[in-house]
Image 1 (cartoon, rainbow, N blue to C red):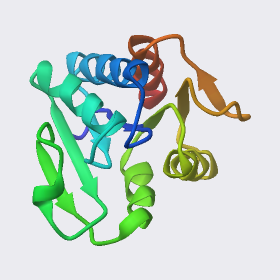
Image 2 (tube, rainbow, N blue to C red; image 1 turned 90 degrees about the vertical axis):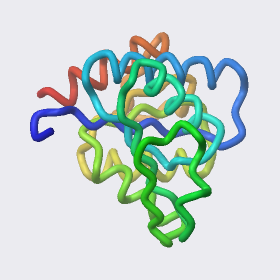
Image 3 (cartoon, rainbow, N blue to C red; image 1 turned 180 degrees about the vertical axis):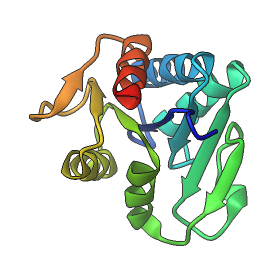
Image 4 (cartoon, rainbow, N blue to C red; image 1 turned 135 degrees about the vertical axis):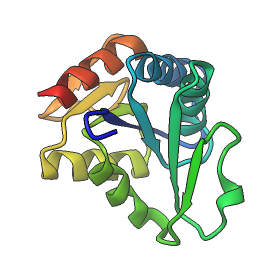
Amino acid sequence: MAGTPYIAVCGPSSCTKGEAAAAEEAGAAIAEAGGVLVCGGLGGVMEAACRGVRSRRGVAVGLLPGDDRTQANGWVSVAIATGLGELRNGLIVRAADALIAVGGSPGTLSEIGLALRTGTPVIGLGTYELDGIQPAASGADAAARALRAAAS
């Protein structure tokens, strides 16, 4: 899997139906392109992205904040219990070649900040408007932009 793109999708654990639909669409597009999803492994945007990935028989890696792998949403393929709490956001960013931020929450903002700080490309979909975030029009557009960024 050396040449495989790893794309992180982050967003609120309590999200709107629109955010969930966009995350699911992004997840499906990531899987269709042969990419691996990396996320926090819990609910909301993370669960929707995992659902999209798994709908296309892709791989969804969940880096969980706690010590219990069984806390992962039901769509995670590989659950890793980090025991790091919110500090696991740094692992998510560092494991990814590009990051898609859907919606916004304090955790989402931390992942965006870490990604921008480390030079990881950030694609935004209904999220914060900050320098360095490439806006996308849909989940599929966000995935395509993230996959292109990961390849460069």
